[in-house]
Amino acid sequence: MDKVLIDTDVILDFFFDRKPFAKFAVEIFNQCEEKTLHGFTTPFIICNVESALKSPFLPKSSLSVNF
Image (tube, rainbow, N blue to C red; front, side):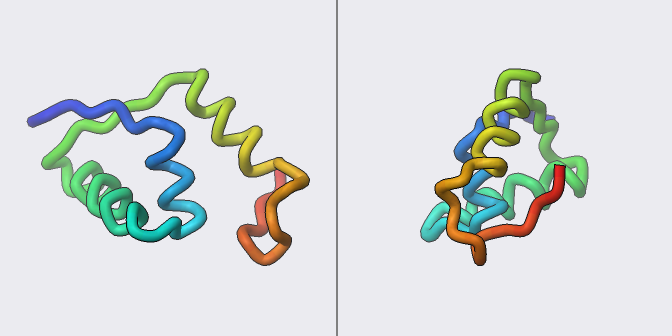
């Protein structure tokens, strides 16, 4: 099983359906769920994702997240 680092951009591509990269992010997460790929991330990446999701510059229709 291959190991991959899932970085901030991959996670944000998934959450915000950023074209054309969202389809690749979905495939990565699907393979992790099917256990054909071992995906991992770091605490720093999680903090970056949280900051991006809390950003006041996001359009309100982008994503509804409550922290």
